[in-house]
Length: 418
Ligand code: LLP
Image (tube, rainbow, N blue to C red; front, side):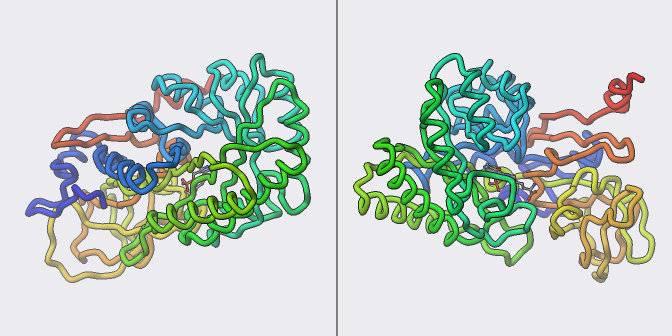
């Protein structure tokens, strides 16, 4: 929950506004975003990692208000498509602080990124190095995405540090050095650094430490082969957040210390000057600031069905993610029973949470709240069953305003041009 969430006599409030008022004013389902909670998380990062460049991974939650907030923090930005470049541009995010990612950048992506003159591009294949080498009109700074062969112990769909997945150039196979050779051979490209991202929702620091050490050793080998000293290292994002009570917070202080030691110790042993370090957290900055509000539509036996579902929360279906659900609109002294909270979509798998303890008097019209839904909820949302995507409502100091409005049926029909 955001720190501002508190239970009162007429239900839950967030940033001083009752969820009943939010649900009545903006409708449900709705993604509520506590803007000060995002700022607090950013501050945690700035305090723990003052010597790191922090590049917000915009894919976690992208809208102009959030991008402006990240820009105000002095953060950089990780984007991965022409659409994300367009959003960054619309928010006035400084181009020189943007990094472009992606394993298969299309001609539209190149055009958008080069048109806005983004500061750095992370290359992920030899084809890309060729393409970018011929497209760049000025010396383009690039990072090479390296696969360090590190297991972050996360869900397979979001494990990206291991061999045998689509991202990066493998260290072990020699592909990473071939990529270095290729970048250095392109006069239009400047090798600005190396990048790795071992996965998402990574709970332990050990994998980052190992990846950092391997990356610095690789910088040593590049120096030995080419006489070029790579000056910066981007260690990606992936810091886990707790979704359920009792789950551990990511040890950010431990991360900072252990990664610094791994980098500095390895670098000094190899005679490499101090490296500039970058990280790319997405989820960790926004997840906890988000709460999704639903209204109960019907209660049938052990199934409490709400007015949203897999179209606004894909994470259950994709990763078997687990969530807490609370009766938020009113207090209840009724005995607790265990239910499944399900959505309104035409699939038996459209389940938001199982084994949920809820008061047995939960009834149609009740407002339910699901916390930790600020990251990869709006950005993964779909129009399945021709359902309109929910709005993002920013809340702060007792005020609420839409940051992204609710989608309308006209929005959906406008695309149907056949
Ligand atoms: N950097 C790169 C290159 C990435 O690909 C990602 C996430 C990040 C940084 C940020 O990772 P984070 O700090 O947010 O974990 N839809 C999935 C997560 C996909 C992550 C994709 N890449 C989920 O909902 O769990």
